[in-house]
Length: 82
Image 1 (spheres, rainbow, N blue to C red):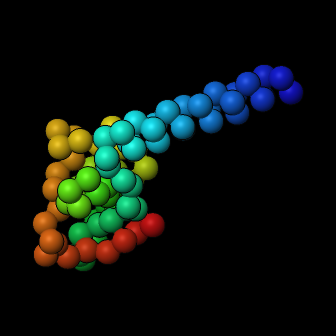
Image 2: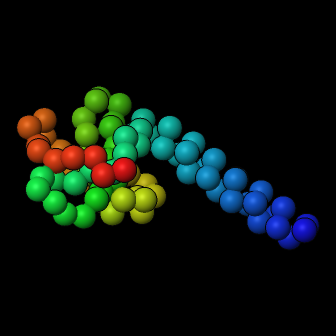
């Protein structure tokens, strides 16, 4: 029981650390998106300037930045897959 609580506590701390890092960078997770007509789903983030960025496969982006993500242009066609 003690080990389970420690594991849950560690998971909570790691999750909060990741969220804090994202908040500090000004990037906000918006959801998962794919280009029309179909394809893999990608993590989508919005930066502090309001621009949207397509990062890694849905649920796998750990540190979004202009170096690890590509900007999505306003007229990109796709749909939310999450």
